[in-house]
Image (cartoon, rainbow, N blue to C red; front, side, top):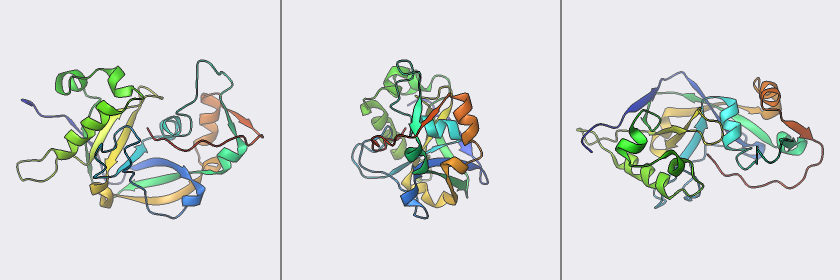
Length: 209
């Protein structure tokens, strides 16, 4: 490309959020490499961790990512599902540099993509973008980016983070918090009009961001 890809920095000391299940409490952060999520590596050579900068975006992109918000106004979640979830408070230990796909002109001008392609359930385009960004090197031969900042599909105009596994030393779990005990949970329930159901119902496997 004839021009540089814009970057976005997250400074050391900031706190990010990741939704997980309580059975993983105390375990290391997991960088998925099975090519099933939006910015995974299509060749499965590196892992990716998906993070939110706020609880609503993290919830909308994980727990509620398949909810039909227009068709189903009930917007419910079972008590069992809530009790089985926790928020991993992830501290940024060293500055993180992300390729900024939300910057003006990047989607069309740099990658030749539209918003529909970036938010599609078909991850072909986004995984190719991930691989391109992962391979970018600076003049010193070192990787330019630690991951990708991209538009939220389910909580627009919020932004999500796809962090490459090679940046794993730059983040660390500060605390695992039961979802129901998170300071932002009650506000999310009220703002997004979420109903809590006693019936456990089936639990679907996670699909991230």
